[in-house]
Image 1 (cartoon, rainbow, N blue to C red):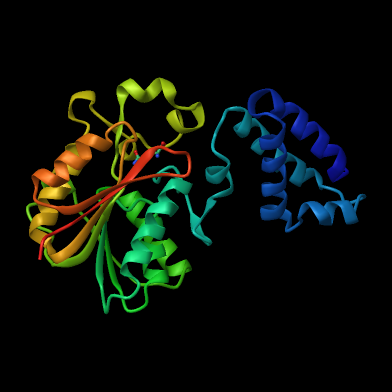
Image 2 (cartoon, helix red, strand yellow):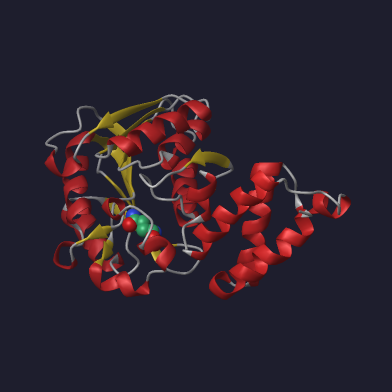
Length: 283
Ligand code: GLN
């Protein structure tokens, strides 16, 4: 079948669920991934065809997209800070807000000699690996409770040509982080059940709940535990960074201040929501 004919059918059937621009986007993302063709290549080769087997593969993708499965899981990859990451249902899809957090850490850390960094709840490894890639001379470690996530993160580190020390650990049960770090960062689960109705089905129904949700009455459980550990395991003058729930900025300032962190800074993401915070352990 002519690709152009197939494209019309594919997009028309996705528009009711995803809208036109998303539907077109999905088509060209898969076209590039599977056929190494960009939009312009299709324009230059208007008679290009899909084989019968290719049509079957595309039809399966169409059905999964109609079911609101995330395109990144279906194609098996996502982009983050200019790097490519394998993703699967063991890990959250990297978010653009998290790129802003990483940018903040890089700009604060890039001139420090031989910094040591720890990422807690690494998932796909996107934070740890991007830091390792962009901070020369840094030693980066990363923790996760999920073996499936750690295996994915390990493959991502290898594919991106960096070395990260991965550790399987349940942070809520940890008493010590073993080493002293210059920087500790975490993007732990922070969505409360009461916020579920704000969520889109592609996230709610397909991304790992282990990485997303906390109890309504204990939303800061990970933050409190990590802050406690950071007081022990950061060097004097070391920095703790978090991605946070946009509705809990004031509570997060309170938490870091209560544990003795100084120069506590809350930052908004590109959408104008309170999304990240940093505190410094006194010297
Ligand atoms: N920002 C993510 C979302 O909105 C949540 C990430 C997290 O819980 N750490 O889906």
